[in-house]
Image (cartoon, rainbow, N blue to C red; front, side):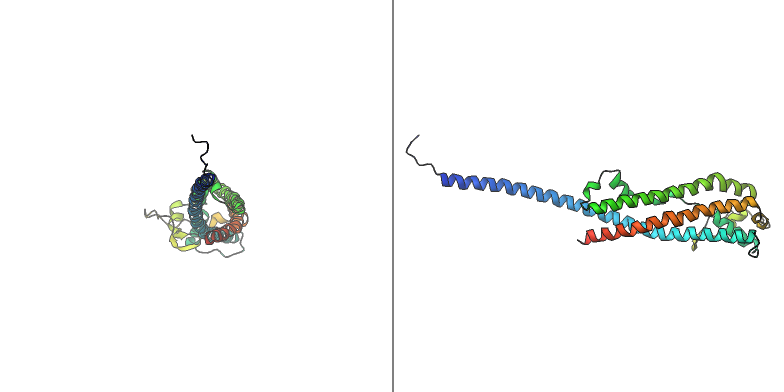
Length: 250
């Protein structure tokens, strides 16, 4: 090697700087692409969650009407049974008793997007930690509603139905259940058309202490759903929906 040959330090420095810049640019592009993919994944999660929670908001309004209609039917039956209100016709009594025979179904509060977030370990996709906290609070409120619904289900299956089977003409009650409580346009149970007599007078049942206690217990469960369960979900649901809408707008 020629000892006297001049080393091109300036060119080496420039080439080194270009190589380093290229590496840094590649890292930056890779990081940008990773962030972009995570952002897109977050957007999909938030959009699916928002759609589901909006559906839950509609469901909540419907279930408020449903539970309130059951409570009103129970109140009417109790007023008639205690002599406060005049006894209506047999068909109306059958319909009111039929209203009390409807149950709550906790499965309707199942949420696939919420389950994927919590149990699927996808909460890390959500960058807004306050939103994560509000989602956790909402999940607790929904779990409380599901527990109250489950109590009503168990009461229906273990106590209400056996009593109705033993003390009423179930075919006659079924025929009077023309719509879902609170929804006159929604069909009730399919009628059992076997030419059953509608002459069974359930009015005598209303004055018995056993049936009145049964109605009071049923009403207590529905009032818990309305006052404790639905109100908690309604409060946190509106907060989370508003936050999701803001996140997606931004």
